[in-house]
Length: 85
Image (tube, rainbow, N blue to C red; front, side, top):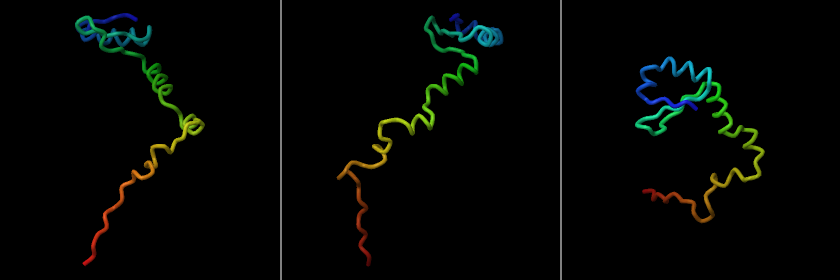
């Protein structure tokens, strides 16, 4: 991936966008340290959709989905009784 120092990226941002769209992800550095990556929107959407499981995948998993919904036995908090006058 091509590397763009932040000063150059700021000064030539339109060119950075054009190169990103035509050639793919571009790395931006600050003081020589890789800081960010500019990616085309289609690739970003693909990465986002593959990072999250779909509802179908969640429903078909073997692991229980109710483990965190019900408190452990004996750990549930009870309401305090209110004395009526």
